[in-house]
Length: 142
Image 1: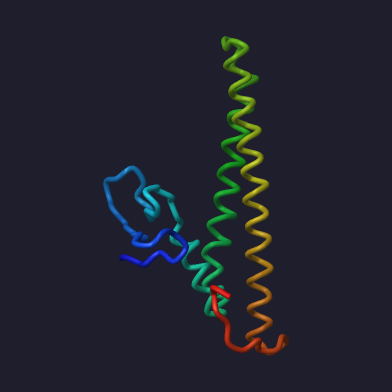
Image 2 (image 1 turned 180 degrees about the vertical axis):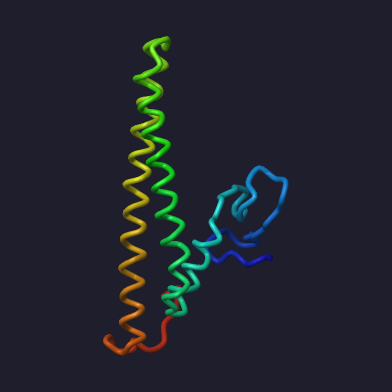
């Protein structure tokens, strides 16, 4: 799938591809000669926000909750391993502690994304029920 890139230099393209056997089996797009990996659920969330469809936000929220849980288990395992395994040198333990801190920081950022997506979900549901007035026509680039 190819999409013209409005935010980049003239003549560039966004290429969304799902290739099996590559480095990452998920989706990625190439823009301005760089690779950025994009989750399919994030694309669904963008479409859901643009078209006011709250149901398309649910896969993003569920995947982020699962990601937080898995990262929490990983961080606790590394923390346990750091203190339980006595044959490590100081620099190895220091590296592992930095990794644990970065994983916990990633969990905090992920929780922020869950919170924001949940707020959007509830707003879109209430808007669909008629609680909020319709804002009329909208344009993504204004």
